[in-house]
Image 1: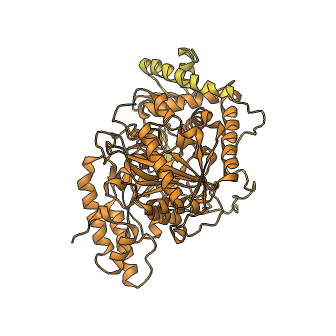
Image 2: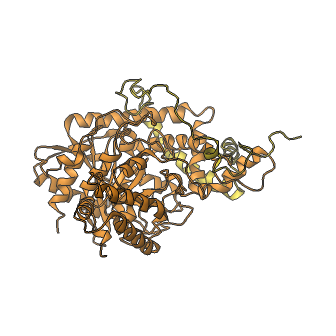
Length: 99
Length: 481
């Protein structure tokens, strides 16, 4: 077993995902199979490899920086247009602190 | 008026407009009517954009009336994958979470193709947030392959491949993170192109895995993809990862002459092929050889580790990118939450489909405390080895030929229960994305059962020109009977 039911529930918590018990069981089995395959990576020697953090690694580090000039923003109305619950120019959410 | 939409190319549209055989407005109206009538057969379009299309067509007609050049895509009916933002036109990403999302701005690629005279007629179905290889993960139902309606069109850009194959658009935009343009192009028998990483701005492309995401074209001819890429490519200050590299006129160099080009066949890509696919690829290689190319075997030794590497990197990045769908800003919110943290959890639990949840879970797991070095860092190093394999190969050859998928289009539902098997089928396409090099699928014949098979052409960073030249010469040579 690469991953336990408890770990699946812990990871779902980190990801802010509410899962049903059936989903927990399903994902435990799926992730187990996938992690088993991923374990293959232990076979390959990477001692001579730098992590590839940039895709076009031969570009200059500053090649794509732009001038820091202010530009018009979306504006309040457009930014809120897709909000499930806008109010008074803000995004409204349920209470944050429980009494 | 009589316009056969499925037989149109960018060139024929231009000819028809400039000879006044039809106007852009007439063409747009007919394209919309035809696409809407045909769509129930495939479910490839999620929604249409008649107002925007007719307004764009009117601008093209006015330009022509004034004697101005209406642009390289003048009047061309274009479909856009529904992960690419269109201002004022619903963009769902195939997700219940964004079922009613109307973007406040356009993607740069959309802006550029409209400025070139292109007419966006609708948005195409896809796997939810572009995660999948069959378009069965859409919250709005699967797409049927127009060539074989009981089969998938491939994915995740299955809708864009299907509309081009079906003839309900002349060209389309898709996105590719691990093969999502080339694999559906192969399954539907059309041309699909994943350009160099950074070639096309991703501003306005809904982020899935940012170090792997690309926008690219679908078309029925190599030349049309070359034209469309030429329009959308180039530096964009709104995407800091877009490359500041000159964009050549890709169509100017399609002269059919590929004599003397050196092509490599990676031995690691040919061993697990289904025999019919393998036979068609070999015949494709023979064709290019008969056109004067030199073919040799090459080795990409890290290939075996590519799937594991890819599914760590793409899920890690996806788990971060999809964190924003929390019920605050983007249309969908779970109704049954008393507190903020419940609202986050319930919204995401109810909103995401199974494949997105699976990838968010895997990505969160590999990034979680204690696992970073073993998974993400290790995968980044393996990615460097895969890129190095390609760099070494391109010391010897000008282009690499490969299959796109181990098998042709499979039946709807056939692979849904085995996510690992679905992931493993991406083996030939993910390596190009990991290395960031340009790659495309070009049709190379059908199986005995009539299913299309694509051949993949991969070239050096920013050398789309050689890729298009080879594909175009191959297309002009015709498929063996």
